[in-house]
Length: 243
Image (cartoon, rainbow, N blue to C red; front, side, top):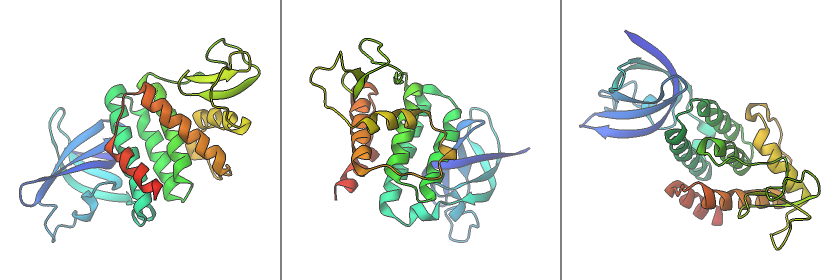
């Protein structure tokens, strides 16, 4: 019996001379391994439709706890805008690796909607660093290290917040402030907005470069300190951004 599933290919591995095994991230089944016979042949109509980052409907012979078998694909998007820019591809590679790692720790299929909404916004030419930071923040609860963004992390005070600091793990009020790096008031507000915003509802981004930089620095430090994730794709992206 053929099963129709919506998903995006997050990994591909050659198998034999003309076949491959793909991993499809789906909302219903999580990450699903699928055998694709003969698709690496130049004559195969499924050759282009079984490449990494293809988003579509996949028609498979589903086998629980085993490799399923691919029958056909209906393309929804191959993210042409992203694939036309090597920097955007680097963002997509990082977000894909990050999402897979987060999913392995939480096994929560709600991550599928977050991931898809994020890369669709990048495809729509929204600022990729902002969208990436929003996803990074939204993934923190699934890693068990979610942020407290309603009060000072040190005393619980809800007023006079003067900065946010990765080393202490959140907001710091005026009374608890010692020598933490001070950020702009806008940065404090925008981090909270990033954390709670519905990505699919974003239609415009107007954030100063300085605020974007401060938010990215905080998230980078927070991930280093609390998540234990060290991804090669993140290192490569940082090198790309340094040029």
